Image (cartoon, rainbow, N blue to C red):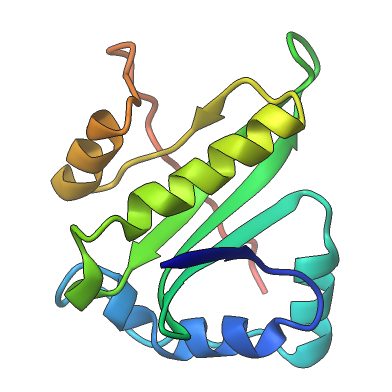
Amino acid sequence: MSVKRLGPGDEPILVSLATNDAAFDLDGRGGSLVPLDDDAGRRFLANPAVLFWTASDDDKVVGFLYCVVVPLRSGDGREVLLYEIGVRNDFRRHGAGRALLTEMEAWMRANDVGEVWVLADNPVAVEFYRDCGFTTDGQQPTYMTRALPT
């Protein structure tokens, strides 16, 4: 298994991941996503705050990890938000998720970022993150959103 950080020029991989999103989600939960167009994909991958890795087995993408470097107004000055991780259903429990987290942690060490956080939205994810050393402080925030009127 190989892990690669995506950058400009890897837009076709983003398109493939979006259109095949259901294969990387829990059974029955996901569906195809609308992929970014070429310009938006290039901007996304060129953004220095975007960290996006893929895990491949024999040139087939079997997992991905998307993080955002968040600037802070105090403390260490920045942290990583693990925004999304996905592993193909048929490759789960074969080390792809851990390989992706290992790459993220190596990037964090090399760039002096000391903390990563994630909002886990299902029991399988919570178990995975706990097995990988993530902890909770017992005070979980309420995740809220607001869509702006169009």
